[in-house]
Length: 161
Picture (cartoon, rainbow, N blue to C red):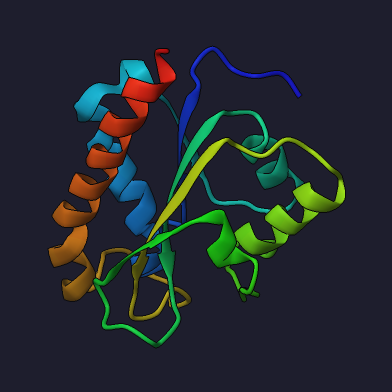
């Protein structure tokens, strides 16, 4: 796997026709106005081996996605590290989700990003078909984007060294 010219990737996961599942993609589109020359951006609604290939191609990876745990109110923003995914098994609309892709990277002994963070927003229901976000998720979207900007600013300082 060859490293890309940009060391930082913003990977937006989701599906725009599954209501709140689109939150990662919508947040990433707002980030394009932030400072895209410092990072690569990719929208992704798949999973499986493609996700493994994407994760292992960058030094810094910020994933923006929805999460449905039922443990937090919709709109809650969770910041997850690689370690947080080791104990997760996800039923994901992407079939093979982030936890499974990480396990595959470990099993195949592929390089993993030196800096990794997944910002995930708790959603009401990521499985219903339809467009538009629930009110709770829509109201939390600006804070979600702001937290992503903060992480990217910090990473930008480290990536130019």
